[in-house]
Length: 164
Image 1 (tube, helix red, strand yellow):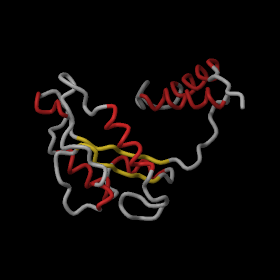
Image 2: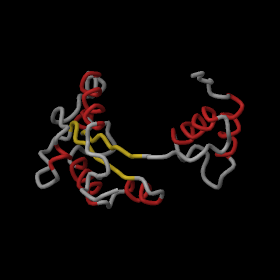
Image 3: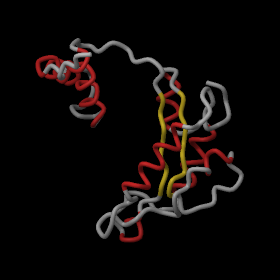
């Protein structure tokens, strides 16, 4: 098998296409770069649709919240996890609009998340993440464990228990 590197011309075309859309420049953040990269890898702009797309939210508190540098206090995290599980968060609306399932994995939420399905809590690595100005939020080994755990989830089920 021969792998072709991403086409820089297609990447530039995709970024220009995104910039020309009716939205503030850069409003989609890294998503614009990711879309351009996908187009460049495929060699076509716009890129071909992806199959079997999933959203996985690895949830954890910002360890720096206690130091006054986080946009939201740590107590918001368990509320957001519950909203995602209930299907009422912004990520759910975006995913639902394109038929993509959402899973949430508690890797470092400083809460027991009582009452949520066991598969939401089964991936917990620790309570809260590290303060990134002092240490890693989670270690590389913890990140690898979280990703590996996501891969073993039963296929065809969302975090809310709904079939997808």
